[in-house]
Length: 362
Image (cartoon, rainbow, N blue to C red; front, side):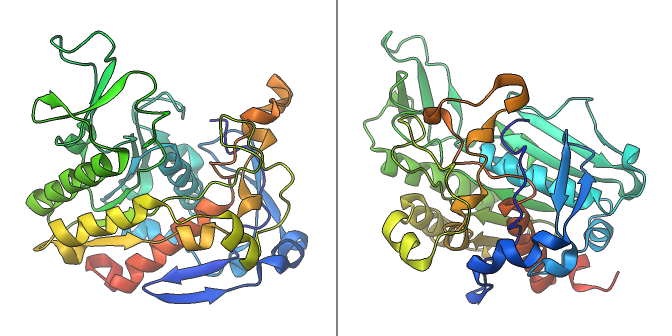
């Protein structure tokens, strides 16, 4: 794990939006207000020491012991791209704070966290619960092309098929999905990839293909979700903060030392086109199971956190030195940092919904 080895002292203090209610702590005060009240801990599942703020500094009082007790004998599953892994790693570290004997937390297959591992399952032995991550960048399968296709087609994205990770979805108690960052020409079209539907190549635009892919995902939920035992959250697009270019064209963020102002957000940040299509897919295709599926907007609040990315520290600078400016990481977020806020919102949303054990005193 390389992209989150940095400290973000602005953890969890920014706009809060849940169920339409907004609350704000002045982001310009973030660094000054808590930097003198930090402590360093070791996250047992990630390498390195991390500086964190105490719970009193959080906008929501996340209680790892309480959450673990509610997750006893259950599965919490994250499915998505590397920003989904970013949130999953955050959840692991936050929950680990509630376990005294860290050796009781382990990956069930003995694997280390890596961006090349597509399935990671950490068990919290004392609670018999698992915190799982499945790398599924599109939520629909990208495969080698059938042999009858032209040679210049190197891969196909089957937008009318549910993805491989769906085999692990049944039986999960809490599920968090995300996608969007890979739905671009650079990730799909340029290497020779094409969209594939009804056993043939298509000429859909990225947006039209995404809409079909989200309908495929939502239709699976409508058919297979058990709303009495499973709660589903679809997290919105996590904003990037590149200046002077995109991720592969000299974009950078190393100069960002405080959150954006309202004016900077309005000038520099755009509304992701994926968010609207995700909401439409949920509303139009999930009818009888709709009460168990929630869209979570983290885009609005995260737009402000230009200061939360690894930037120059996207790789281990002690080993590799500083990366060229055109390879800065202004997409993922430091841990501790912004993803902790997403998980605080998730915890608050589960308590607010009050389904099953989440509505009881434990």
